[in-house]
Amino acid sequence: MIIADSMLGKLSRYLRMIGYDVRYVESDKDDSYIISISENNLLLTRDRQLHERVDNSILVGSFRSIEQLDEIRGRLPHPEHGFMELCSICGQTLSKVNSKEGLPDYVNKSATEIFYCSMCNKYYWNGSHTENFRKMMERIGLEIHN
Ligand SMILES: [Zn+2]
Image (cartoon, rainbow, N blue to C red):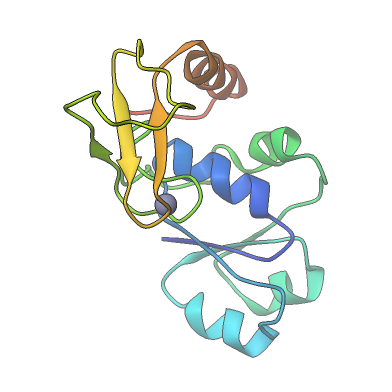
């Protein structure tokens, strides 16, 4: 599990897309809470003081999520899941949609694979956008399963 502070929302979503269990901490939580949940987990933070108080933490310097990925790659553990197995918003495991009937209009029904998050009531599908994302991650040098 990776803990990400409230400055790293977009980075959290990217990491979930490539298979990491990420717990995003809302900005109303204080440092002692973050430190307590960071035990046995890797903390990603933009806060230097917090970084200095947590041994297993990475201080993220950049404001841009792509540059942040570049900063932390090589220091991350192996992802727990494969590409597009987790909902990027809540982190729950996605289920595969077997029937294309009754799907909302925004879903691309010609996609080869469609996935669903029952927590967020949101659909995901494979297509050029996910392929581009995967290629971008591989260019950065992040390990992706499946
Ligand atoms: Zn979700």
